Image 1 (tube, one colour):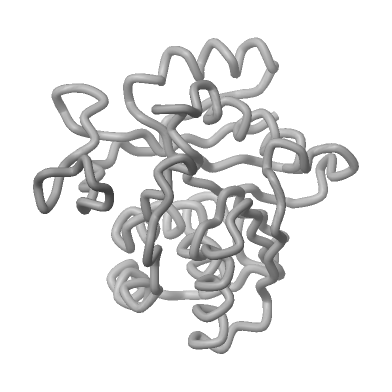
Image 2: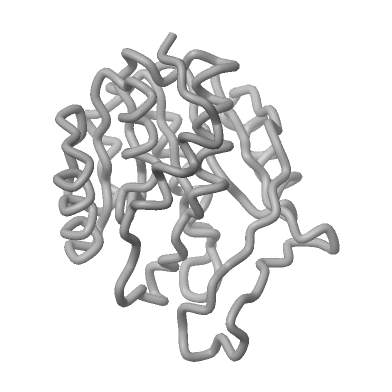
Length: 215
């Protein structure tokens, strides 16, 4: 198994460029290097679902999770996103890190499952949380991911949605496991953010869930 320390992975991910002008409608909140490193390190070391695996990153944005997966030895990783501007930054990141085991696809994640059933070993993602104008988008991403994955889906969600996701997992006849609860500190990105930094507060613990779902 490819050996890399958690702090080393997080340090490398600090170099990933993120959104220059995030788009509110797409809920473009970057995955922090800390959360990405913790998530990927667990997937790699505990479940062995990255190294030499085909990995899909849905709603990949600027490629934080894809790049981390590539560093951990993914056989091949494909990022999917609807925003050409984000993928331009993603491509620049790939060039800066000199990675050859990553590709990207410009598309609407909600419409890619047809013809891609069980195409990837593993699906990773930090999907839109389904707020503002995108109610239910998180569940659409989850269902699409489950159709695309052979083995498992690893995804980040607000803690407050745990029961709803469990209900959906039962409905879809898949197993759901909570891997971790993580504090998600969100830098001010939009005009309605009045403070330099705010926290997404799904409950009083100010945490979000890292989930694994599989058949």
